[in-house]
Amino acid sequence: MIRTLAAAALILLAGCGQGGSSSSPPAGTPVDTGPVATFSISSDRTGATYPIWVIAPADSATGPPPPTIYVLDAETRFSTISAVLHDSGVRATIVGVGNTGGDRRQVDFLEPGADPYYDFLVQELVPLIGSRYRVDPDRRVLSGHSSGGLFCMYALFKTMPTRRPFSDFVCADGSYWQQPAQVADAEAGMYAANPGHDLPVTVVMGGDQYGNLQYMDPLYQQVLSRHYSSLRISEHAYAMGHVQMDAPFFNDALAILFPRAH
Image (cartoon, rainbow, N blue to C red; front, side, top):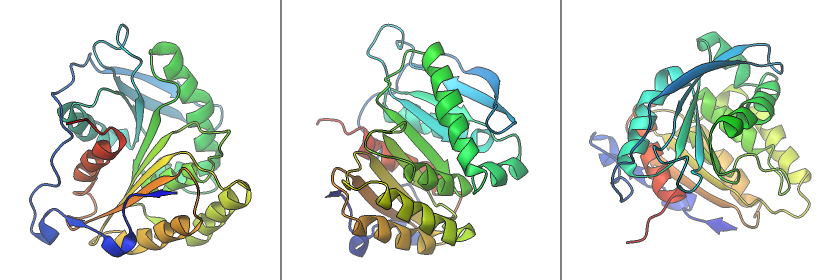
């Protein structure tokens, strides 16, 4: 397994509680993007209708097919995360998935609702995006924060070497305390269902010391202890606050997922 950051060497970013910014954005100039497209999709899996926001690179129809970044909680995160992506110079199509309100997110992001919501993303939304936009079918990133960060790990635990709808997971300050038993069962289930112990994905976990870091680190340690081959996993700690850490962490994750040659 490729281990990019040991838990014993956790890095507290953003001035260790003194405010300020996180690490520098990935190198590059801002990407020229097209307009924001908005539509909705009614899910047979969950029975709900979800608002969707999409921004694609302006040259996505003619240049190399870009990766896709799926951002949960789009009502509160899409504008901020898309701005971080634009400024980073990373060329990608960003898909914001709305949750139709705070009550709905606590249905979709937690078990048992996480199972049909996962099916909605993988079986309904991903194929729809693939039919409407020219994207790289082998590079899909899932980004979630708080309860969405919890779901981000649930989605990881459904990953097998032959079933990888998402290639990368960016899980920000996940509220793993909400369902500790279910999270433990899901993690153990992934290990049991993967006898080859191969997991060719990248997982970037970020937690805040004023938020959910204390609940994130044990989960990180558990996944690390499985010694999956091909897994790239890293843990990053912040001292900014539960909400405030989301954008800087996403920026740091981009530098890991899309490193640029200097």
